[in-house]
Image 1 (cartoon, rainbow over the protein chains, first blue to last red):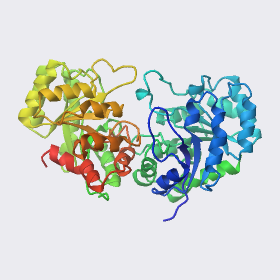
Image 2 (image 1 turned 30 degrees about the horizontal axis):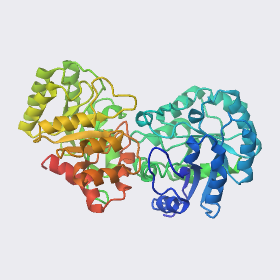
Image 3 (image 1 turned 60 degrees about the vertical axis):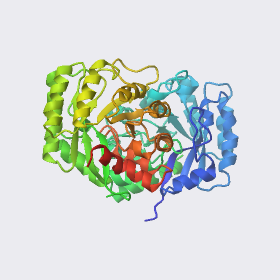
Image 4 (image 1 turned 60 degrees about the horizontal axis):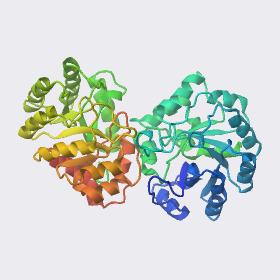
Length: 260
Length: 256
């Protein structure tokens, strides 16, 4: 069956702590294509640990320019001066969103600057990707151990910035379900979680049942992860209905982009 | 059955399955395993993960697993969970659970680092019974827990007990270091489980150890069967190597 599958969490470039394969646009597309993924939203691995993170944005836009199946997500650090220019540049470059890595950029999502970024991105039609972690904290480089981003306060931010779409990436079961528990009801309409770090037997389905499948996005974290992990979890281990699969694999992502 | 034949998952903890007792837990684990083509599951650590289990807690844990095996002897096999700090009790559990069946191996978690002499006594009995030892291993960022073993600890232990097959679980988590640590010790295998589906792991393990020393394990139910299978299905290795990792090697270890 030919199915549209949008990978909302893929990467290009180099990760400083481990060699990755398939990290060029051509190689990534070939690799994720093996498991049937037809489109991918990509961020720059390099940008996570660059000091001037915005330096990676133009090269990323250029790298994906000739590949209709790839959409670029820029990187912004709102704790640096002139971050507004970086957000504007991402929009000018045709990017669909901007990613922040508060734990690598030394600020907190509860800091006022994040609210300012949410406003600025929303005005320019960019979604904001809040990345909780890049790799398992238990095997970080011993001289660069970076704790995950805490999601406390996220619901307040959603309430105050209803004009902006937020995608939380690389959150695990406990973190996603913690937000759902705090919400004590339906999640904010424009809040999404990407699923690459959701584990446990049948875990993706269990999380979808808790937060509503409409808030879940298909993601692989490729090429850092084997992309088969995501497809096997969704198509083989879980027992989603066809409507749920349509939503999870592309419908939610398309809706997210349309609503920006 | 998967494209690579039947699958043996060498490392499963039914603890987190959404079932109350052994029967419900077994049904839940089998429901998902069937979807993934997993024929056999190697079970240990049942109701509760306890770092320093008492004798009673060990017995209750192993009883839970034994009941699952009794219900489905064609789908489950077991490793007797031991606390090596309780050496006499450990040796008695080995006799009662393995020598008398139905358990086939030993599970050592984080009660006592396996560099301790008590573990040598356990290994001697394991050798007599040809029982493999599944030892949790981490090279944890910031240092291991008290009682937690590293792949280097397993390699040293294995060098003193060459007739025992050791499974260095999780390949040390920090797998690039873990694989290197056990590379020169031929009676140590690594399993694939308990860490994120990080690309390159299986390729490096096969390159350094040979496919014959790599075993598919999931660490389910806390981990997904699927995410851990991806490390094999998604690896750039030969189909023959995949078959060894998914099933053939564990059949050899268990002399099936």
